[in-house]
Image (cartoon, rainbow, N blue to C red; front, side, top):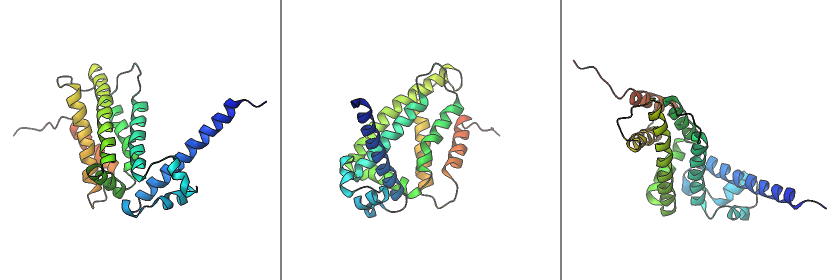
Length: 204
């Protein structure tokens, strides 16, 4: 008699694979064309699944964006971890670059995210939750870096975390709305190098 566990495991794995296919198909389409022009049928065609399959995993297109935010949080949490070694500044910047990887492929996709965060209640609620949980992770990361002496400790960790997140979001906004060809990662490196130095300047 076959064990039920392997069968269940395969079923769960197939469901996960199908959801990931739908998600990646939706994200790739949103990187190519405006949100209003992307249909459920287009997503399922690109994912090579039946149209009705979409609704087994996502309530609507907005739910795909919510899932994007959730997956970004999970990636950040995994990267930060709960290890005993305090973070360095370079590790903080590396995590930011990791989170920016999906964003860096399409300015249109970033502008779509920004617009939905301002106009769509479902997406706004998900973004608010992401901000809250992201701030908690940021404070954990910054506190560790402060404890190791990697960054200044005379400013509360939550204020520094907000500053770091603000620089990232500001850079993302400027990059997505700029006609310049500068890459997102290059712009992040430039701005975080300035932040690392504390914007010190020479008095004349």
